[in-house]
Structure formats: structure tokens, C-alpha cells
Length: 358
Ligand SMILES: [Zn+2]
Ligand SMILES: [Zn+2]
Image 1 (cartoon, helix red, strand yellow):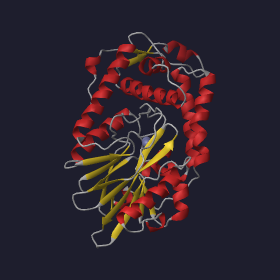
Image 2 (cartoon, helix red, strand yellow):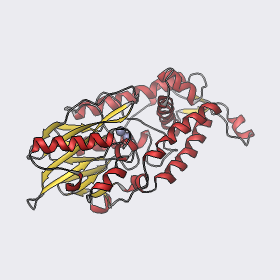
Image 3 (cartoon, helix red, strand yellow):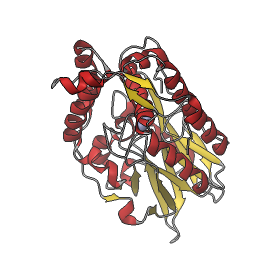
Image 4 (tube, helix red, strand yellow):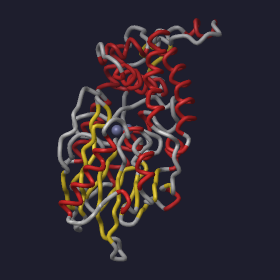
């Protein structure tokens, strides 16, 4: 989940599916601390026409839109045919996080492509300001119960809301379930967890995994109390669903980090990481602690946006354990007595051996 300083690698990378579709990976500097990729796909539709499809749009922050344009320019040169935003048929958004759809405000001005997103992330794109306000309020409640000081809470919420200036709510043309989870030759699977409406996209023997599965890093988790259909329980179920659905996948291309060759192996690693983290939380809660204290024990002294990420990640694990009755609340009397929101101290009710992942 850590976001350390990252620089996007230079140059467009090209891949080919087993049925001859061409995939161009365009690197973007999404935020100062975060690099990632969007993908341009050129694939023959069953009717013989060449479809030009963009998967995700980047953040729209800093140089990201120019890098997108430069990427298309260099694809035009290497594919020996013009590919500009104007020529696109579809823009498929993997999920409603700003680093994947923020560039849409810009892309929309230059394309007539039909833009799609899953139903459960639709409002992130179409009612952005509303969602930011609602989640900010829920975050503040979560921080209070997590035991975060008032001053730190104020700074974290400010940080969360800084993306407000990046994006304006934008129209979307279609949603994935409404079109049967298929767009031309692209097949989609709903994988809620990392976000509510996350999808992975399959083209022939290649999988575009968005942020559901990433190499080297474990995709960020937040408690479901912040947004319905997120949380660790949904995420782990979606990992399991993907495993059978992705049979025959040779190459997995994520929204960040490098391609994955051994997808089942990577799914297993991510599952194991969460099992270990759940165990660590149970071990730490031999003594009553708040979410903020557990977060500090798990991730150490982190700075800036990483504080928010660490708290959410810890909150997701505590929520998972508490929902299963493996943790109890130590200061229940205090919670019952006061009308003011109070920090909750959890303690373990069981050992690690009771954790059974899906
Ligand atoms: Zn994401
Ligand atoms: Zn991302």
C-alpha cells in the first residue's frame, strides 16, 4: 500500500495478444509520489473494423495529460497509423479512483469516444463533488474512532480533498452491467474491494487488472464503512472470483508496477500478505489499542498521504476481524456513556489460528 516517490519509466511499451491485438502501455506521472500506466488497444472487431480503445485516462494532474498525448503520438509513429484522442472508439475506466479517471475532464474535450465505467463507481465520475463531501465526512468519523488527534484529522481531510481542483463531474455514456459486461471483444469481471465498481478487463490472453492485482505492491484497502462494496471481505472474494475467471491468462497488465506473468502465484502472494497482516493485528491487540496505534505499529512513522493510506489499510483489517467476532471493544462503557464520538480501543478475543481466508 505504500506510496513512495516514484518516477514513470520513459517510453511506450508494446504487447501483442495471442489473436493479434496490439497493446501500447503509456507511462504517466500520476502524482509526484505515484507513477502508473494507461493502455491503448488496437483490436479487430468481429465486423472487421479496427477498434481503438483507451483503458483508463490517468490523473489529469501536472504533466499527465501531456504525457498521454505524447504517448499517443509515439504509438502513431510505431503503429504507422494516426491514433489521437479524436480517433478513439471507447474509453474504459477500470475503477473510480482519481489516478485512473482524473484525465477524463481533458480527454472528453478532444474525443467522441464512448466512455464506460461500472455502475458502482459511476457517481465517482458523474457526481464527484458530492462523493468527495460524503466520504470526507465519513473519513472524519472514522479518524475520530481510530483515535487520530483533531489537528492531524484536519490535515488528513485537507489532503484527501486536494484532488477537488483536479476534476469536474463528467458525463459517462454507458455502464458495464447494462451492456452485459462485454464491450466488443473485451470481457469484464466485476471485482469489488479496492473500489466498489472495480472491473478487470480481459482481451484474448491478456488481462488488464487495474488496481485489483498489482506486482510488487499489495493493492490498497480501506474499511467498507467509508464506501459500500469496498473492504477486505469484498476484496478477498474478488481475488477468488478472478482466479477461476482468468484461466488461460498469459499476461496481466496493471495500472501501476510491472506486468505479471504468473497470475495465480501473485494472487496467492497477496492472499498470504493479508493473512499475515490480519495475524499481526491480532498479535498487536493482545493489549487494547486504537486503530491509529495499530497502524503505527504496522507501518511505522509514515508521512503525508501515507498516514491516510496506513490508517485506512489498518482500518480495513480491523473491520474484517471485528465483523467476524475475533476482536472485542475494550472501552465499551466509555462509548455507552458519552454522546461525543470517541476513540475505540480493540482487543483480541482469539488467536491467529481462527483466521480463515476465502
Ligand atoms: Zn485504485
Ligand atoms: Zn491506482
